[in-house]
Structure formats: structure tokens, C-alpha cells
Length: 173
Image (tube, rainbow, N blue to C red; front, side):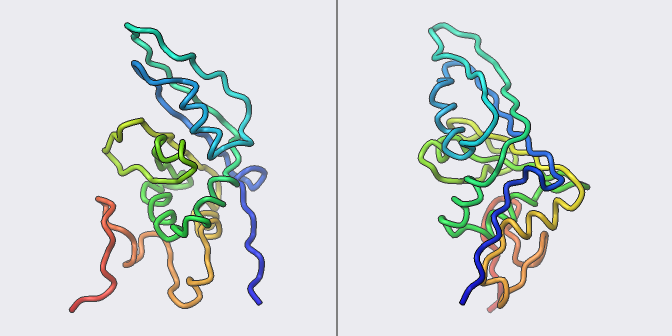
């Protein structure tokens, strides 16, 4: 019998979780709010910009502290992308701070797709920052799955995805 998965949220676990997004030009605040709510439904209330009228010079940064990650983590488990999540969430780990991006268009569909560093996808991203003592251990626990008993993983190991997001072959022919 498999033990039940530990449910982590990032809140009240000694970590600070902040989600940021930049809304520019004709981007629709209510649609972005919908995408945000699909992954972070238990986040503190946010005042989102209205649908812009044209022409517009809209350029707003929304920053939401204290965001629980439970729904996003559940979706990672449902999508079975936990090793990818470990690699993407830990790729820019520096000290006690992990920063990663989630594409907003995928979030609108209730999916988690990680943005690649330096890439600006159509529809924008949510930048997630997790900070605090032990963030590396938290990332490992949050993305844990039974397969790691057979193939152990840690951040930056030889099985990590390449910097461009491509899968790394675990063996050479």
C-alpha cells in the first residue's frame, strides 16, 4: 500500500511565496485573473485591471504575496510532470530563493507549463518566487513521487533537463 502524498502549500511552512505578473497593452485583466485563479484559487484577493479600451498604454505589475501553491502542486501531480517541475522550479535556485515562470495561457486551461528563461511566450507568464530556509528540500518534497525510490533525483543532477528545456538522455549509445 502506498502512503498518502504529503500536501504542501508553501504557506506556514517557513517559506514566503509571491506571484508576480506584468500586464501590458491589450492584455485582458479579467482573463489573466481567470488564469491566476485556476492555479492559485486560495490566494489573497487581487485587484486586476479591467479589459482595456484602445488605444492603451497599460503596463501594470501585479504582485501577490502569501500565495498557497496547493492547487498548482496538485496539478503537477495530476499532469505527472514532477521531475520536470523539480528541474524548472529549481533551475534558478540561488541561496534560499527559487524563481520560476508559469505560462498564463496554459494556466487558463488549468495546466502548468513552465516558461523557459529568456523566453517570452504569447500570453505572458506568472513569475513565482519561493524563498526561505530549506527551499531546496521543500522543492524535492513538493515534487516527490514513488518513482524516485528507483531513480533518486536531486536539483541539478545528471538527469536534469537542459537549459533550453530539452530532455537529457540518461544513457549514451
